[in-house]
Image (cartoon, rainbow, N blue to C red; front, side):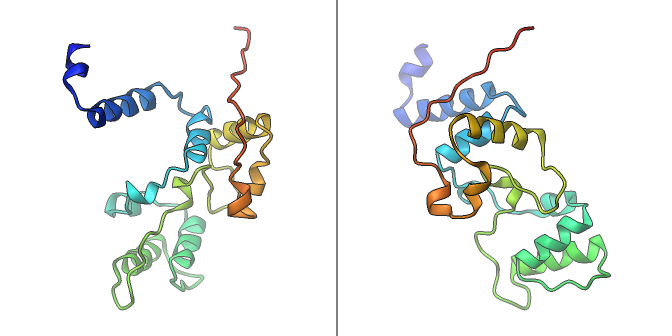
Length: 161
C-alpha cells in the first residue's frame, strides 16, 4: 500500500489496468465485452509484426487477410506466398504502406476470416451481449449504432457447482 501511495495517479492507473486484466477469466467473453464497451482501439497498442505473420497458418484466413490489405492473391498461392504478399503490403514494398490495419482477431468483439467459429470467448461474448440487450451481429451492420450506447449493467450468471 505504501508503494501505491508513492506513485503518481498515472502509475496507479497502469497498475490497476494490469490487475484488472489479470482477473478477467480467459474465454469468458467479459474481456471482449469490456473492450467493446470501453471502445478500446487496439491499433494504439499493437501493430502486426513478423511473429504474428509467421503464426498465421490457415490458408483461407491468409487469403482473406491478403485481400483485406489490398493484395490480389492467386487462387493457387501457398501460405508462404500469402504471408509474403501481406508483409509487402503492410510494409509498403512497391505500394503505399497499409497503415492502421488491425486483424479482425483483435477487434472487440473478436471476428474471424472464415465461417468456422473464432473462439469460445466470442461465443461467451455473444451470450453476454444478448443478456445486455445487444444483438451481437448488429455490431457490424452499422458501426455507429451497432456499438451499443446503452447503460446496461453486466450481469454475472451464477451456476451450481
